[in-house]
Every structure is written in structure tokens, then in C-alpha cells.
Length: 374
Image (cartoon, rainbow, N blue to C red; front, side, top):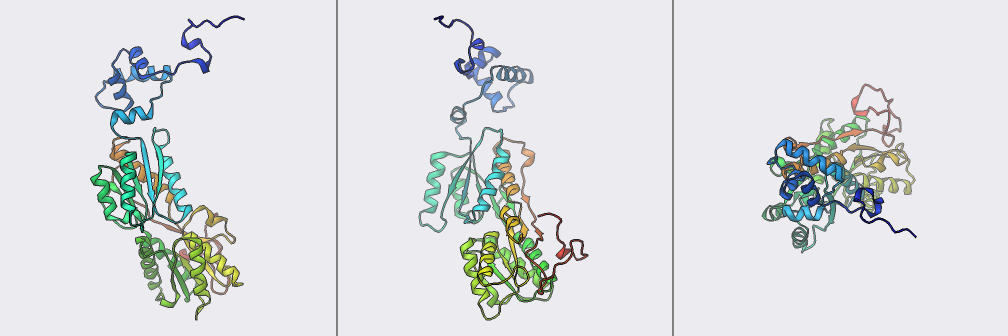
């Protein structure tokens, strides 16, 4: 049997037998030092344009791909963006992940997840250990960990960049993504009040979440614009979970005065309201109008499709990651600066007038206007 000619150059070997190009190969072919190649890879301004073009051409020619671990070691930092969260809503967390992944696509950065329990006694210690072990490039903090001043201080002391996503201003502009939750909840209140509801219930999130307070305050303000007040007996606390929404809705439905509409502080709890209504034999929306908050993908897939306040969670995650990359010099610094996302109500078929009638899509009242699509 003929033996392969091992003297032939790498470029003529079968693909699986070719040797992977190294930084030394790039440096030798471009006639520059390894340090210069490293500077080109990391977008250092210390490289002359002509040299940069020559090195980049060789990188393309050799199909050179830098080793992320080697880059991290050289730069004394990892190429990890961490999402640290205690949010009990899986839909929220998944949407946030997608947004971060949108931002780091083709950057060489990777996403690492770190769920936690903010109520645990060793919560801060565990997060500090995670930061020390993995040395992330930066951390995205959604509610409610974003509202923890001690966590933010620990990250600053660890010299770890972070961006906080919260319903109010909590930090320096380049560390903030604001969500304006109160205005979104006010829109839900205006919608239900404009439909003619007066017996309106509200299921708010955990008191440890600033968003729960902001959404309830905004909802009450919106009702006040119509001369309505939120009755204490029509308010129940949930945990931002399906089960807590169902339990809270049952307390309202079987209470002394059954509401004709319920606004839940997030879509997970609103889905629980659906379950409670069906178990009680109530029709949606003829007997009970239901509105949620977040507009997670499941909202449009419920039956009837759910009216909810759209919070662009994926966009928020993407912007938070972009701010981290800009702050660390890995992306255009022009992106730095606080971002604010104003929610908007999306009217679907889970809300109607108290007598079960829907307004037509082109009604002149913007509070009850229904979009053509979910």
C-alpha cells in the first residue's frame, strides 16, 4: 500500500490532518511579533493601520482562531458575561438570556448563568466565590438582585463590571437599564378602567422586588385618573409564579366581592389567574377580564390570548450586555450611557367590558385599541 507523503505542505493535507494555526504562525507569516498579533486580536490602538491590515490578512489566510482561554490569561480577565438572577419566572430569564446572546454573538464572549436565592444567609458569599473563581468580564443583574446595594458594592470592590436592570434609577448611567414599570402598569389600569371596570383586583409580586411596588403604584395612579381606587380587599400578594398567581386569584374570586377584572404583576401569575377562573367556572373575558405584565411569549399562546404590558425583556438583556462590552472596551464606547425602556400595553382577547363586549380594533379610545396581531 502506498504511504502518504508526509513531506507535503499542510495546505495539501486532508482537512482532518491539517495542523491548527497558532499565534506563532501568524506572527512569522506577517513578520511581526506575537505581541503585535495579540494587539491586533484585541483591537489595540497601538498598531499602525498598515500592520493591522497585514496581520488580519494572514489571520484570514491561515483561518487562525484565538484560544479564548489563552486570551483570558494574557489579558488577566475571562471572556464570560455572567447573568446572576433570582427571578422565579422562567420566561423572563430565558428572554433575558436571548438578549445577552444577541449582544455577544460573534464577539468571542460566552454567557454563564448563576441562579441564586437572595433570601439565603450565604447568598452574597456564594456570589463572591463565583466572581473570584470565574473572574467574569462583567455581570448582568436583573431584578431583584439588581436592587441589592450590598451586591453592587461587592462587585465594585472585586473590580468586576456590572449593569443593573431596574424599574428606577439606582446607579451611574453606564451601569443602568431602567424599565419604567410604573408607567406600564398605569397603562393597564387605564385600559381596564376605560372598558368600564370598577371592581378591579390586583395581584402584586413579592415585596422584596422593587418592581412589585412600582407596578402597584403605577396601577393605582392609572386608576386614579378615572376616579377609581384600588380596594384593599381586592389586592393579593403573589410570588411572580404560576402557583402563587392561582392561589392569589382564588382568594380574590371567592372573596366577599368578586372582581370583574384582575391585573397580575407578571404573566406567570396571570396564567395562574386563568387556571383559577376556569376552576371556578368563569368565562374569560365575559365573566373575568385578565391582564398581565411582561408580554412573555406564552401570553399570545394562551386561550384567549392574554392582554398584557409589553416589557422588551430581550432588548433589555441585549442593551445591558452592550453596556458591559462598551465599558470594558470590547465594543463601541458610544453605546455607554443609561438606557430606558418604556412598556406599552398589548390588547388581546382576555379583556372586555364588564358585560363581555369587545371594542372594535379601530375604536377611537386608545386605551382599548386592539392591535391587529398578537
